[in-house]
Image 1 (tube, one colour):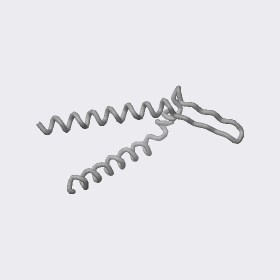
Image 2 (cartoon, rainbow, N blue to C red):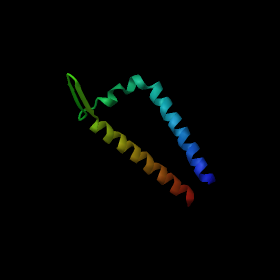
Image 3 (cartoon, helix red, strand yellow):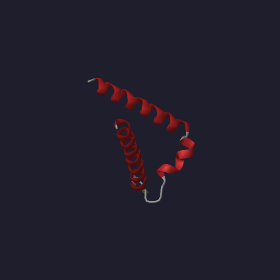
Image 4 (cartoon, rainbow, N blue to C red):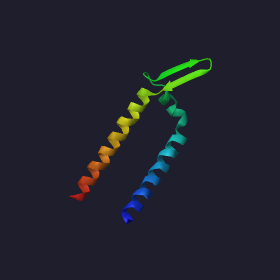
Length: 78
């Protein structure tokens, strides 16, 4: 039960840090929702936004971070 508390606390800290970075650098990240491959359709009475390339980029980035965390924890367990 103690490990779950540490995990929740660590996750909260990471979310706060990521939130602060996004808040501080929002003007420099304006391109991130407008990548080539993101689908935008605007018509009278209807709008559709499907951020395919943005979601793939986020997925690749998070997968890389999780891989690094896994690698680091395996190194420290040995």
